[in-house]
Length: 224
Image (cartoon, rainbow, N blue to C red; front, side, top):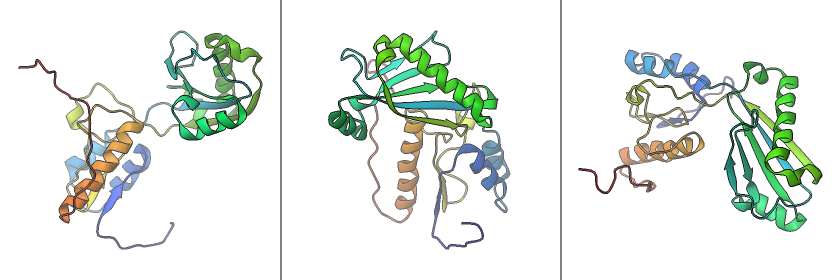
């Protein structure tokens, strides 16, 4: 960190889009067209995530994940104990639910103004009470609020113009939600997938087998 120097045979650059742009812009003698493709990426507006530990479980018929529309800034609701091991352990031990609320594309002020972020978080909880009415009367045992603006913005520009895992240097590969890959994944899934693909790219150069990456078919069975 800081002025520390380390020697390595290769590097996986797995930074958020803004940090990656700055790092690549500072690379000496980097290919100009590749540098331009990285510089053209942009960050999405900030998002807010609220995680609530509830004293009692939500109704059993609630879906594990629910996308919403028409509920203010609330974009989705996750009942985490249905699919996350840590939340499931807590729910079994305490008899409650762990619920997560997401708000995307928030006002830019949310990234720098804690008051603005708190206001969005409070609104998310109010909207949860509309979506899952039983939560109105369930005490919140613990609450965490996360605000970030480090996701990539996917625009209508041609996908092939976005930088991929490979770079002009065989010793540098990229990973992250902003990096192009051919699998039908997005955001966190793309960050994880490109991490495997980046590691596999380097391992292949050393004659070492990497990690198999499985995906759903991307071509219909009846396609000609």
